[in-house]
Amino acid sequence: MSGDLPRSHGVAARLEVLPRTGSTNADLRERADDVEGWPHLSALITRNQTAGRGRLDRTWVAPDGAALAISVLLRTLPDDPAARGWIPLAAGLAMTEAVAAQLPGRDVAVKWPNDVLVDGRKICGILAEATTDAVIVGSGVNTAMTAEQLPVPTATSFAVLGVEVDEDRLLADYLRALSSTVAALAAADDAVASGLHAAVTARCATLGLVVRVSLPGGVLLEGRATALDPQGRLLVSADGSAHAVSAGDVVHVRPA
Image 1 (cartoon, rainbow, N blue to C red):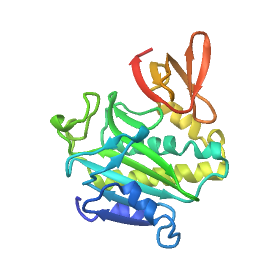
Image 2: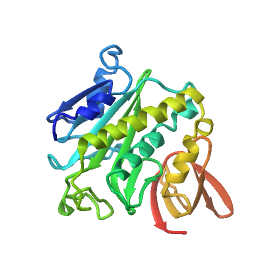
Image 3: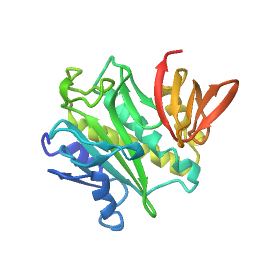
């Protein structure tokens, strides 16, 4: 890890850097019951995660030193379960802003529901998991990954883009944005009133595109993504009807 992350330590309530681990989310879950020792906005990070997990129980593994795994513990949460459903999108927005700060001139955006894209290619994935009274938000950022190490052709990394990422700045910017966004969401107990709905809508690359959504149960939905509803669901127009998608694997088919 570059340096001792002074800026990040200044933002996080508690920050530990692990030399190697299976999953930062799993590690943080084990610590979540210790409310005093691991308060709101505590974080675990590593550059060598060997058994990470993404959406739909997919494995997420990167070569040692090629990616940054970050897990953040959130305890200051909205009361409304519908508002809590926005936390993955809040994290996506926060990471989009942190990534964009180091990639001026690039198109950095949120892909619904949990990815960060640079020029249409995935640089970060996000997975939020609820505990009894907290939410753990895990993210994996492709930092030093070479073109040969990319898991799929639609992925990218800071290294592939020719940028040596400042990890301390990235992490501090992400934590700061995540903290303020979640605090506003918790205070308003509503994504629209907090401004999160409008902010994510403005940054969401999925809106306006024709998308193919693999829904639970093997159902396939193809149509144009038109909006995010107040619950954070993706509205897809297909066959003359608007379908509200709360969970699914989304592929961007073509631009509007």
